[in-house]
Length: 380
Image (cartoon, rainbow, N blue to C red):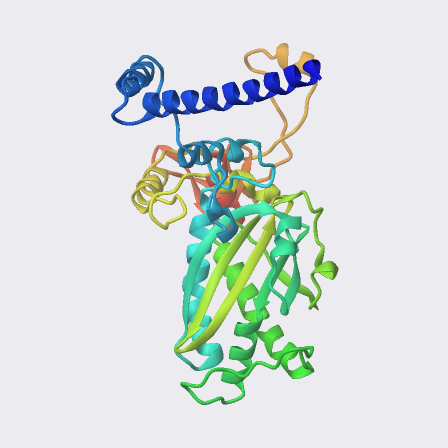
């Protein structure tokens, strides 16, 4: 019994000591951490000293900006920071500055052509020129849409033209006499009819014709429509990882309109890459009219050496080296033979040789041909 009593007394005393110690510890902690406590000022001072002595700590927004992670990526904003360096989906098109001139010219041509095509007030604007992977573009196409696959004959490759549903219904409404001020009706869940496909095909042909004219000052490229697709899976003209140039165009017809997008893979533009690398000033594709006029003037005043050839024959080199004064060379020319007027190795015309006073002259009996003029200019 004594032992049991001793154990109970010890347990009670232990609980009392623990509870009292906890209360003392809480009081001490509250006293040290309270704003008016004895050690609050010391703690704040030590933290301030540590902050002064060390580098500034970045907040979460600054860290996200540095690494390139932000919510704006979901809205198609440009990525920056480390993410832009390591992301393989980003491709730069800045190395082809001539493309901007070509596409600006395309916008102006389309504005005129579509006004004649629709007999309506049409405004075409260039929204963006960007580069991306072909596979990423196919996954981003908003359906339903019509995709036109065309071939660039001289470049021996393909391109893609996408027309969204808003523009399709707007074009159909305009061409079939829809009233102005009304929004084109859109029926969900049905495929495009034959009439709609035919009208959009005509629109695509107009755009491709303007694209050919836009490239004409740079090089001759003919864009031929290959096929019309409604499923992006059937419009695969390149590997998903291949880079491509994407041009987004906005077509507005008063209160209706839509978007069309022109996609050109880098493989298509590779044959004319050197031309696209040219730097330009203004919109003249690098031409200088003043320099052209000065060059033409100097070419017309440049001296040219002419030779009148009576006859030509071949003789052994040894005989020619042993010629002496008084030797006679027999030619095949007769008094009635025509002499040839030569500029270097180029034959210009022919005529009759005679004498005027103390000088030997030649009478030109045939005009100089255009081919001979061209060869002389190229030789200079």
